[in-house]
Image (tube, rainbow, N blue to C red):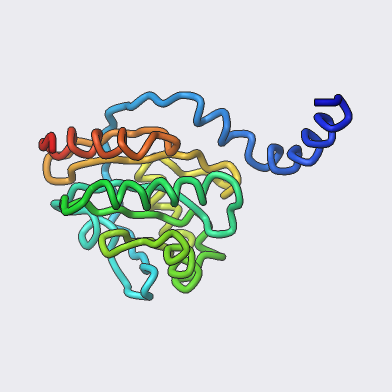
Length: 191
C-alpha cells in the first residue's frame, strides 16, 4: 500500500481512536477474573418502559450475563451487542438472563434501547436498562464498572450465578462460544 494511502487511512481513523483508544487496549487481555459483587438494587427502566429494581427483578436467583453499552456508540458497543445476540442464540433453551446496562442514561431512553435491541434481533430474556443518572452511577459502581464519562467505559462482561454468588469478569471481546462456556461454568452445568 502506498504510504500516502496508508497515512490517509490512519488519519481518517484517528478521531475514533482518540475517543475510544481505551477499548482497543482494554480488549487486549481476555483474562477471566473471579469477582465478589454486592449489586445495588437500583431502580431502572427497561426497553419496554417498565420500571424494575435491578437486583431483585433482574438478577436475584438467576444466571446472568451483563454488558455495558450506550446506543450512540459507533465502535465497540455495536460489536458487544452483536456478540450478545450470538450468545443468546447459542444458549438455546438455557435459563440465562442477558442484561445490557446503559452507561449513558441521559441519552438512552427506553425507546432508544428498544430500537437498538431490535437492530440486534434481541429476543425475550435480554433486558436493556437505563434510569436516572445518579441511580445508574450507583449501580455501575456496585458492579465495579463506573467511569465518569461514557467514552471511557471498558468492554466488560459480568457473568454470574446470583444464587451461588459466583461471578466472573471477562472482556467484552470474548467470543460467543467462550461466553457460553463461562456461563455453563458459573451455572454448574456443562451442557
